[in-house]
Image 1 (cartoon, rainbow, N blue to C red):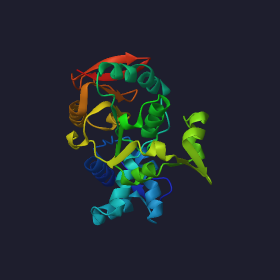
Image 2 (image 1 turned 180 degrees about the vertical axis):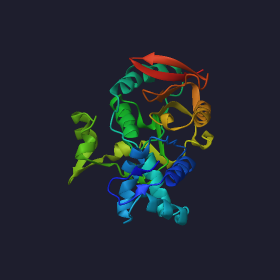
Image 3 (image 1 turned 90 degrees about the horizontal axis):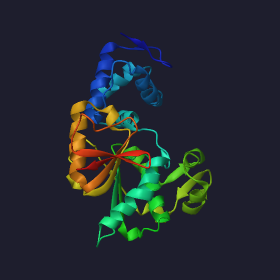
Length: 279
């Protein structure tokens, strides 16, 4: 079945839709069902226009000829970059701040160090939100470790720069923290060094072995598993269990669960937010 591609003169052939399905799965692990033509259009038509191509079919031809070059990376980045915002879904942050961090600190008699991993960090808002929250709690910066990873090098460049538009800081970021932790630079807001230096950014594919990353008290891996098939979900959750400290906590997206995938976690409801605690 062919589908008309908005803004192009040709239709995306069934053969090329299958090619893109396989290409996206091979490069990112994302599964595209037969009804995801709209997603391909939304994510890839900007590349078609940028490359001055006539259609998604021509983009497929370019990908076949291009190997692992620039366009190859652009397609992967376009398909894996997801929406994010500061303090997204406030309830889990409230639970971490009010209950889970104090709980962790009480458990430890010697070390007060807290380690976090923001997996699929996109442009960095989640990781920087954690950093600001910990600073607001008065946690010594020497006891804070935050790793933020994403498969897209391009989006990580934006995250490392820590520069955001007015629209981006206007979504989820309290005005008090905007004034305290950012400075205005023309049309953008630059996050201050005291926050930036708490976060270490690294390129990483969640399908890889995770033991190279270290050990963590909290892993935030939200709205990622929904894109993978069951085998990949099992693999990722197995690896996540391996890098969590004893009784470590995993935060998934609201529509995600470990149920019927792994028995390595117990679900905990904290302040109205669901966490998965390593057994």
